[in-house]
Amino acid sequence: MFKMKRPILRERYHRLLLMVKDRWGRLLIAVLCMLVMAGTEAGIPFLMKPVIDDIFIKQDLDMLKLIPLVVVLLYVVKGFAMYGQEYLMNYVGEDIIRRLRNQLYARIQDLSLAFFHREKTGTLMSRITNDVHIIKTMVSTSVTGSVRDVFSIIGLTGVIFYRDWKLALLAMVVLPIAFYPVVEFGRRIRKVSTGRQEAMAEMNSFLHETLSGNKIVKAFGMEAYEKERLNHKSRRLFKFEMKSVKYRSLTTPVMEFVGGLGGAGVIWYGGYKVITGASTPGTFFSFLAAVILLYGPAKKLAKLNTRVQEGMAAADRVFDIIEMEPDIVEPDVPRELKAGNHSVNFKDVHFKYEEDMVLKGINLNVAAGEILALVGMSGGGKTSLVNLIPRFYDVTRGAVHIDGIDIRDVAVSDLRKQVAIVTQEPILFNDTVRNNISYGSPDASKAAVEKAAKAAYAFDFIQRFTEGFETVIGELGSRLSGGEKQRICIARALLKDAPILILDEATSALDAESEKLVQKALENLMKGRTTFVIAHRLSTVGIAHRIIVLKGGEIVEQGSRDELLARRGTFFKLYQMQFSLDTADVDHEPQ
Image (tube, rainbow, N blue to C red; front, side):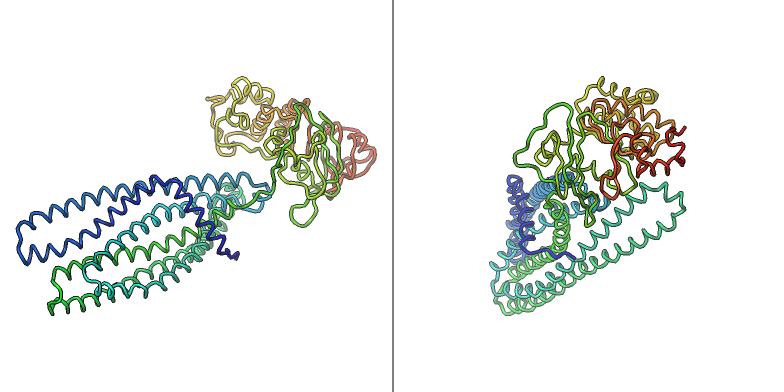
């Protein structure tokens, strides 16, 4: 497992403390409230001496009238101070968590597609929800409690030393005995907490996959298998949880034992001084009350240490993402792309994901307004090639140019404004039809949205919905058919009106009737745009000005459909395989 270096840990602690410091105004008032609370905590045992010596022994009626009023006043002040510190420290804690969650999500969004291919969706969700929530517990509760308890300990320590410094030394000498086991338990809890959070993230990922893919689970009768998988993951999480419980539970008995040793010593030595006349009963009971109250915050601090360790383990996982550098680097001085259609050029492009080279020496010039079809067997590099245009990935070697400008010299946001994409799997959100179409164009007018829907052949079926464009389409567009989803995506691309268009097998998952409508919509979309069409069905490439055939990451053929068929090369073989035609029938379109 990756071992965190101490300078990195210290830097992360420092960053969390700076986030706390940013709210210094509320923090200062909260600290003042804690000081008041500590003062009232110390005031209660301080009053024990006059209660016993003046009221019970000397039977002073004036003190009997005064001290109860002072006690009531102390608790009123303590109540207001407690509310103030609780509210303000929780405000600071919640605000830190809000900013941490926003930073984490922002960093995740900034990372390249390669990151999302490495990480599981459920794991990332767990970091944003579960891990950040653990940090919230640490900041809002543990840090608040630790500051409050430290102040209480300081105040109560002052009381016991004021009453009898020799007796105070005896009471305090046992506390260091508990220091080592508390620290050791904290170290183990942090290690266990990291494993527990990883197990929780793994379970979230499993739940996300199986619940979203429940249709396949049922279709293949895998319910029992998935239940057993969850049982296995639950058992693993349970083991981590119980280890954490074990170490947390051991902390309190250790502190109780230490407190018992200290209490026994105080009773023995303090009782001896009272019996011999060296001290008064009031002084002794005042001292004893302060010691009893002192061990309370000390025990709480020991328990809070476990929460802090869990929180820092979660903070490590959060900061691992926040501190991750994006693979796609913005240029220092970005260049601008002119308005209008664009040419796209690939110059000696090589690309690999991990070790194996996916694209090898691609040289390709695509003129402005040209429709280029990319065909070939799966794994040939078609999608990898078009993914380089919007810089979802960067080339390993070579360069991609738009109008002669290296796309790495263009701001990523400006570059992606020039590109619209329609994929094989329609990506829609659980929102209204209107908001899905205007996604990426939030300022689009109602008329513009409807115009895009008409051009995408989506307007008619949208109007059939009871709420029309305001209809919520469900998670991933679950209320729509495959063809309807695709036409919404095409309308979205039409509304964006980008000069470069990428169609990644946009019709391959549709039935024949839906494909015809979607194909008409795509023809509207392609007009006047530099278009890259990844085609699985070779019947859809007839509209292309040029076809390139990719095999093993290299361009092995290019030309028009008729030219490629006449050559009887790779494209000819693909055509034969798909339509089961013999060489005599290749000139005829399949019906």
